[in-house]
Length: 303
Image (cartoon, helix red, strand yellow):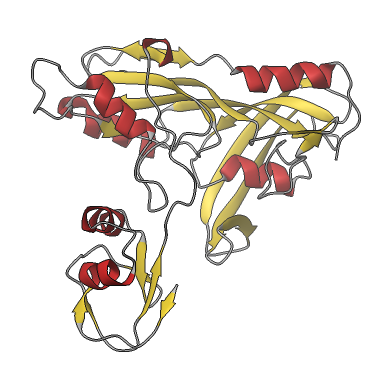
C-alpha cells in the first residue's frame, strides 16, 4: 500500500515510477484486471488522474508462476460449441488481480488455437468459475452462438451442479439442505450468513459415506454464491477438510492437507444449440481419493 503525497500524474505512469520491478505492460494488465484500488475503490483506467493525498493499493501475486498446460486427458467433452474440462486443483479459473498468468483460461486459449490461423483468437467464453483449490468439471462456450444462452442457463440455475466434498461430521443428517442469505466481509474476504442484506443461497446434500468423525458428501448447488458450499458446511459445524479460511481440519496423521477438499463432480444442462440434455462427470483426483482412503482406514490422529 502506498500513502504519500502525489503530484498530478496518470495512474499507470505513477506506478511505473514507484515500482520499477513492474513493466508498463504488466501494470496495464493489473489495472485492467482490477488489481489497483485508489482511495479504496477499484480503478480500471490506466489514464486515471491522481492527485495529492491519494492512497494507492496494488495487489500482486507473490507466488512463483507455474505455467499450466492443458492436455487431451483433461477434456471431458468437446464439440463445435461447448468445451468441458476437468480443472486441476491449484489453477485459477481466469485471470484475476492477483494472478494474470498461468490460468486455466490462458491455457485454454493456447489449447484451442488453430495452428493454421495463428492470428485468430479462439471464441472462448467464461460461463462459470471455480475457486483455485477446487477441482473438477468446468464448462466453457467456444462459439459466439452459444455463449449467451449458456450463460443465461447458468445464471437462471438451469445447469445442474453436483459436487463431492470431504467434511468433518458432527452428526449430519443423511440428507439435508441449507438456505440463507450470504454477504461478504470486505476486510477478511470471508462470506457469512446474515439476517438481511445478503444474496440468497441454497445448498442440498446427502451423505455418501461416514468415516469416523468425517464424511464424504454429495452436494447439489442450487445457487452459485461465492464460497457457498464452504460457508454453509462450516456454519453447520462440518467444515471442509483443508479449508483454512473456514476452519477446516488441515492435518491428518501428521500430514498436512494441502487444499480444500471440494470437487465439481457432475454438470448437466440442455445443449444450447440442439437442446438435448448433456451430462458430464469429472473423475475425482488422486489427492481427494487418497485422503478418502486414509479416512476409511480410520486414521484418528487429526488436528
